[in-house]
Image (cartoon, rainbow, N blue to C red; front, side):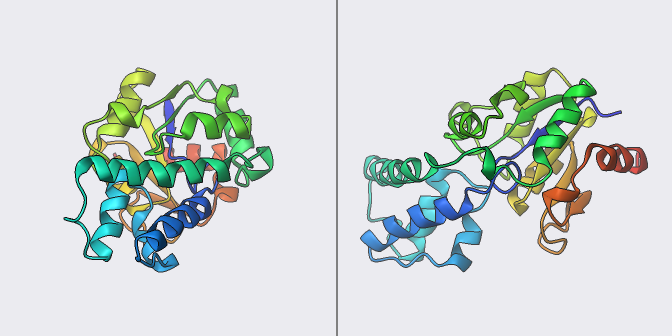
Length: 222
């Protein structure tokens, strides 16, 4: 039996992607850069500064701002994003997740969060799920963002389990790459073609159940 499950946040526990998109689009337009929904897909799973750099590159502005100015822009986006997520409630938990967390707790399976979002602790509190997580990795304390495996390795260290004893759950390709590099069993949420490198893919969280995780863990290639 696996000893831990390490979750991403956006698109797995709740869906704040729409809020990120609204905030990035607002910032982009203030700079004369149009951030489309299609381009927004490239921002999923990566941290705030990496997202900003991608947007600036889209507008051929990557060399126009100093590091300090970029930090101000990123903070401007985050301040607006925070006003949007203040409306999040338990009603925004994705289907099946609450039951899965309950079942993992009943089976004494450790649960961790590996999100690039610095707002993750606040979002979990608003969802009423903070008590379900044994640990939350602080992305500000990391050297590298996804697809680097550091965040998942750190989660396993904090949970005191070996990566090979854990399952990682992600909805972004960069997140699946990070899980695989960290040597956890990778579970994707979303499109099988987009997440082709995952060990197993669920179309949505409603099918992500403890019994199914137990089944695929038992059937995994060792």
